[in-house]
Image 1 (tube, one colour):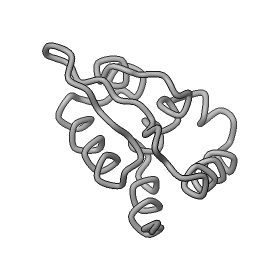
Image 2 (cartoon, rainbow, N blue to C red):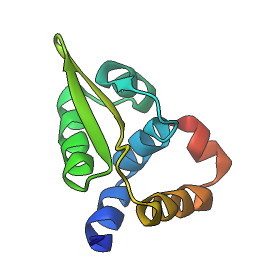
Image 3 (cartoon, rainbow, N blue to C red):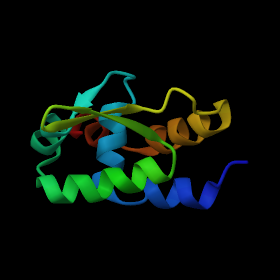
Image 4 (cartoon, rainbow, N blue to C red):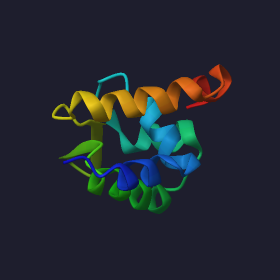
Length: 98
């Protein structure tokens, strides 16, 4: 069952939405890369990524001292459609800024 409130709450915060914009390409991204592109500290990114992980939107993998994140490949079509709709509503500049 989809917990739409948890998903939308996770996407409602600008840092998390920027992270999802980065990760939505399906590739794996190091937290250090996301910190640089989003201009966030490591602790801030960790807190926000934990929320995205709990919402089921991303998965993570430890690689030495860094954590690599990617879009959860097990997302249902409905959840993907929700995230796609949220991203489509963003101005193109905001999607590219991520």
